[in-house]
Image 1 (cartoon, rainbow, N blue to C red):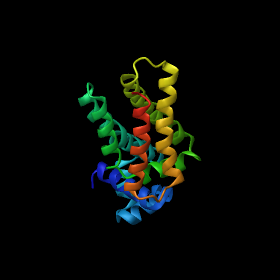
Image 2 (image 1 turned 90 degrees about the horizontal axis):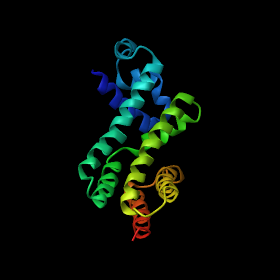
Image 3 (image 1 turned 135 degrees about the horizontal axis):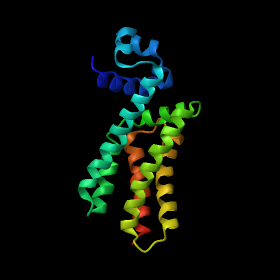
Image 4 (image 1 turned 30 degrees about the vertical axis):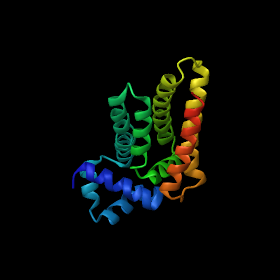
Length: 180
């Protein structure tokens, strides 16, 4: 099994089982591999968590950012792509990483970095939508959009994806109307 296979399966197990899935014994038992296989790819548990966060960041954030960069001149298309790609991901992973961050300062700081980057993407889109708005207004609105998305995951963690997506589309419609 390759390192990316370990990371991908770990995200799936995290989604299904919560943070307990990130314990080495649990992972090895569920994946049906030995600790030796784990340590072949990861020096220790901290290295594993760091690499898992990097893998999650790449697949859940950077890949989306790289896709929307292809449409720099079409802000509506960028919003559509974000919405489409965001819901192609397992959002339970987001919830469980944030739960882990409550007790783990390293994970917390990592998520702060991810949140800043994601909010900056929304700020960049908002600047295009409202070029005459102040930096403060753009920042506040972008933060509200992001907080609505993350917050709704916690308020309704078991919500059907279609309903979650509908709520986000409604909020985005309000967001877009405020710009025209």
